[in-house]
Amino acid sequence: MLSDLHRPCPLCGNRDPDVLAQLTLPQPSHSPLPGGYRLVACAACDFAYADTPAHQADYDRYYQQLAKYGGPTGTGAGQNPADQLRLEQLADRLEALIPGRDAAILDIGCGAGGLLQVLHRRGYTRAEGLDPDPAAVATARALGLPVRAGLATESPGLYAGCDFKLIVLSHVAEHLRDLDWIDGLSRLLAPDGALYVEVPDPRGYDCTHRPPLYYFDSEHINHFSPRALRRLFTRMGLHPTAFPATPLILSDGTPYPAFAGIATRVPTGIDGGGDGDAPCVDALRRYLSDSLKRSAASLRIEPPLGPGAVLVWGAGSWTQRLLGLGAIPLAQTRAFLDSATNKQGRQLAGKPIVAPADGLSRHPNAQVLVCVAVNPHQIGAEIARLEPGHARSLHFITEPT
Image 1 (cartoon, rainbow, N blue to C red):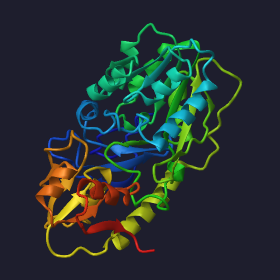
Image 2 (image 1 turned 60 degrees about the vertical axis):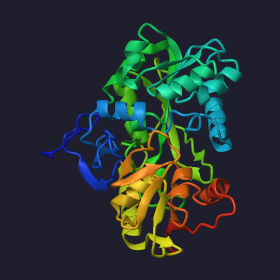
Image 3 (image 1 turned 135 degrees about the horizontal axis):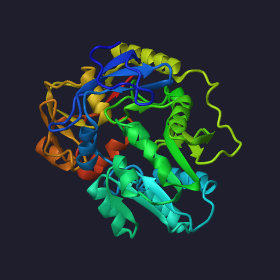
């Protein structure tokens, strides 16, 4: 038994999980989240998770104040073609579970309401949402969407007495430290209602399209397998019916592995499967081994930086991982550039986080080290837009081919 365990298995309470890795993830100043955690796995549940010392209240505060999902350009708002396609495809899947246009639907963790917009356009006018971020709620309400401000953990109480035909948690469950409250969602389902939970798929984690350790960060603290979701559904008193693959295509055209778990209040005669799959924890061990080998031996900056000042573009999860790996030259770094207004004015690794336009104007001769995991070369066009006609030396964290 781990004597210093912070978080027993959220699914079964196991207090002796296997330790997979220690991750270092430096945080912006005043962040309530820890600067790293131990990644552990419960073999009985086929479930990997962060043994984080932070409490659920810390994560609640983070998603209310610091996360990137609340604004109109956050993931789930449908503000770029790839995100809009994802929402349309999600709505296609959900329509097969909705008995009619008048069905009551609840989207927990709805962000700025991108999915709700799609559903309302398709005639599902009783679709409503819940999100912790006041900015997300304000954006959604400005669009005329029925969205309530509140924490996911509060939903069983906030909606007590409701009978929803469908409850959706799309890329939400992986962010939640405490999972006991989820048991109460079954009380919100109508007798013929269904629960839809979509999460990243650890079986598809690899270093082909994403940088090493990309799938482990401060936000994704649960890594579900179909077997783990089945256990969660069963604990809730629900009946699993399907675990379809739901891969996403990101803005750079590359895939992001995901799957969904679907469960109903009453048995349908359909068994969703999942128990016979190879353990996800084994796949995670292979991915971690490959990631750590690549991170330690092959990450480098191309073209090499010269002497002088450096501006690091990005203060998000990939930059945090790179800082933890010692891959960013802090002695040369003058500032981190990030367009997220809730990060600006803070510090990361002792350096200020500023708006890109401000940082570029203050340091006209600085080299720019791009630390963006998805489509990093788009930053060149953004810099050209911000300072037309100005030559800027761009550098990228890369692996040799």
